[in-house]
Length: 144
Image (cartoon, rainbow, N blue to C red; front, side):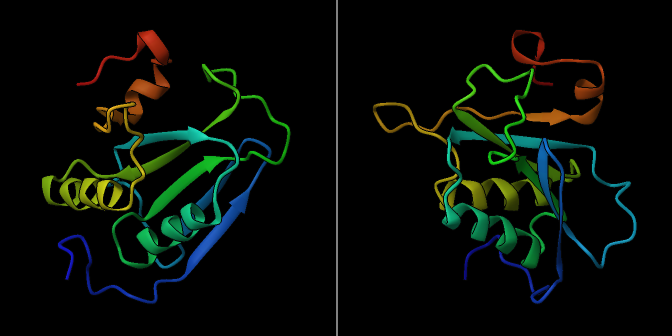
């Protein structure tokens, strides 16, 4: 069994959609105070159904309690995007070491982290919500 799988199967996945985002979350969780940041993964539009399935699986398996991705069908243009042909997925987490390890293992094992032309994984950072609130995007973002 993969080390990121937990025994929290059959969690209900709720979905909210707005022009900018499609948000998936654990409908059974009442308190999200432990979530302090996110990993960001990017890829070219459109979002494959396989990726949508993996987002739901991550919630169902207890790897993440909340995940959102760009709403690529609404026509909304993200002002922070460097490439309007890409979408972003925000994988929310606490900064608990074990939870982060399970999440990164899930992302790598399921090919959700982009690779360079020679097949090496891009370095993805954990972005704290305070950094987002302080408008740290693009070159203004420095991983902590």
